[in-house]
Length: 264
Image 1 (tube, one colour):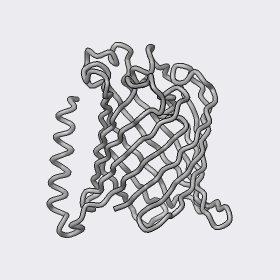
Image 2 (cartoon, rainbow, N blue to C red):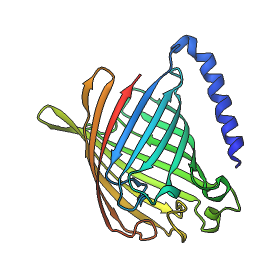
Image 3 (cartoon, helix red, strand yellow):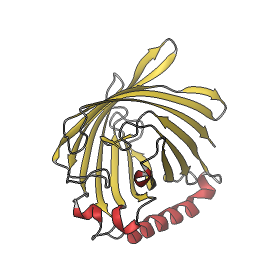
Image 4 (cartoon, one colour):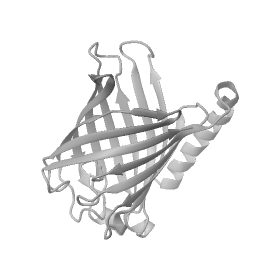
């Protein structure tokens, strides 16, 4: 599937929906501006900057209350020597739910993402993906929320370096979230997920194909402090256990993230 075709379809759909619904639902553009400072940049099991920190800046736009959104993120390593790993993921997505308010309510997000490696040729290692995420927010009376995400990633160019090492494939993520814990009066969000990687790598981080196997699990805890109107701070700490060395040669990873989020 060509990148241009996918983008054209999604942009047309967003345009039609936004124009048709903006007057009825919302005439204003809303979103968030978020800056994440992290001790390591862990992404789907990969340690993108090899135990070095990063600052990721993201602009996320809610397109007039239609359910469609656009997200653009810029990743900046905090150490030199990783310039060829810098990227800008751009994501077009649609978020909604079915059976709202019922115990069987399903929240879902579907979308397309393009990963532009800034200091490399677009035809060399850029990647793209289609994804769908599902969660069941009301299924468990105890407040545990199960989720599932499926991703299909492929190189942007059939003759690229990413294609040569078979960087494309499927990823399946099974997760659990829980919001019932508090520290004093401060709510704590707990999370855990496990990933099956069906051969998807991120060039130029890897030089050999990724094995088809259960790659890693992550557990974490995070909370949010409201600093003032429209501005919040979200710290989190996370631990990863890796089982597949073609994804991560270090079996254990521990890192922290502090996110400053402005809503508009």
